[in-house]
Image 1: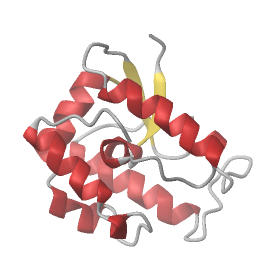
Image 2: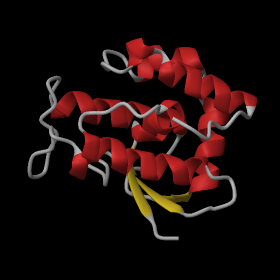
Image 3: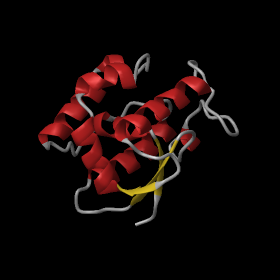
Length: 144
């Protein structure tokens, strides 16, 4: 399996993802990655980055080398940095998928998202906290 590149905050998003997104292309790409991350029979390397990742390529907010989200590139970078720091990771490094999923399950509580994802427009839907809660219980969603 090939290496994936994911931005820091997407390490949390994948657990609550339920098919919502910025465009149909983004949803399709995120669905592909989420399916691989939720598949417990496969493991692969993930390079954790602070900045644009492969899902961003399908987002209508992506500009040449930055995120043009309504909240700003610095807002999204800050989300990445908070998650990377909280998990004790190093940006740019590669980790096994299984290691990252385990770290999120161990180190992130649903209520942590109030700080880690503060002001994220998706937080109010509750799916992210639900996804983290399910991960901590060992429940892996198969459909979204």
